[in-house]
Amino acid sequence: MSGLRIKGLGEEIATLANLPWDKPLEGWPEDEVLTSMRGISRHVVRLIRSNPSKSNSQIFAVKETVPEFANVSTHYLGI
Image (cartoon, one colour):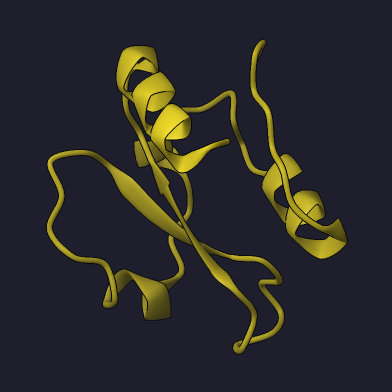
């Protein structure tokens, strides 16, 4: 996937880099505990732990969107 940039620290980067980026987000496995925390969204969203083996690790939301909206979001977030 060209153009994918992931910023963060060691454990976070390792987890995010190993996600199945070549598959549609809808096909990604879900953490049943985190699924109950997810709200309503027009887009597919997956909640991912920075360390799946630690229940107190950071949680990231990954949302499927089109490049135009992603670019606007990263611009406003300063990424």
